[in-house]
Image (cartoon, rainbow, N blue to C red):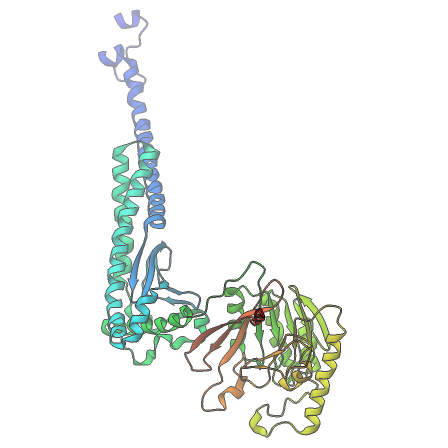
Length: 526
């Protein structure tokens, strides 16, 4: 009765009698009900902290890989840069500037290896070339150098990722315990990524590379893959061959005469006689991009028969995104010229002049349309009426150049025979037709400027005709460098081996200005 007298119930709502402890401390019962909620809150907080550590760790691994995942090492005569970048597909990229790159499906995992071959040690190259035995030893040691470089790269990447992650975690959490957890997790992620690459390594991937750049047209730079077995020994031999062949290519490039281009240099790419070869467009686009071309000049025979279906071939002109100046060749019909003219960046010249990138260019199409006749000099040459027609065409263009309000910097013709009457009217004439590269001085006209005739080889390897001889016709093009006064200062001739060939040649010629003789100092008379 005492409890009831004090206003306290004698039993709980469930019928049980409350204990003395619960009667005296009712707040304890409320705390026991809140305990599960506090437990859930603690669990969420720990989960959030773990996620935060994971995010910071991933960011640290990414930053550490980008900042420290690279080493420099010697590979043969090259100074090479090896680097690791995060990716989802793995693989290896071997960059060989300015020739392009080899892409190898060498491994899986979230890391990609990039090997960029840099400058040659000129003195070392000269020593190697003087001693073939030394070159052989250098290419053999290149395998060990690659192995050592990759090992150092892996260790450096591990250290960089752990260090970057720990520093980032300290900055974010200001807690050494969480920073230590992040560093350990970073080590686990980086080691796991590199371990995945190592365990999925496919040495035979070097047999089946994907090519980019000029190397697309020279896949045999790494040798005959049919002779290579799927084992490490042959992989090493293949790598040695790759280093040796690229060394030879780089030696050619490094030996080019030095031409210091001024800011106002205009770069012109001269192509001719593509004859429907689709490979030519890929090569042209590569050169346009890598050499910073301002204008592309095509001296004709872009097609074989000049038919309407062939007109679709010229659609690739617009992809170059550079001014494209064209004259018709004897294999190009009026429909071909019209199809070229429809391209937004194309200019078709037929006894006319135009000014592009500061260059005033005159051009005239070939007067003939002979798609069914051989263009080979071995066919017996031109019959007199055709030769007269070509000379007359050249005279017509010469008259147009002389009447031009602006000085003409270069003229375009298809057949070199047309160039004869142009002597003295312009410093430079570009031609094609013969499928053979040739440079000569036209007979000088007294009192007139000298004229150089540059005949281009076939940029399309003469099309199907290029396979008729014992050796395929190479793909040829030339990069011309004009100074601020639009005078030719230098030119690079680029030759890529024809179908089935592996040669990539680049030769530079720097034009030496004529030396004006100094008049002798008169001897005083006595």
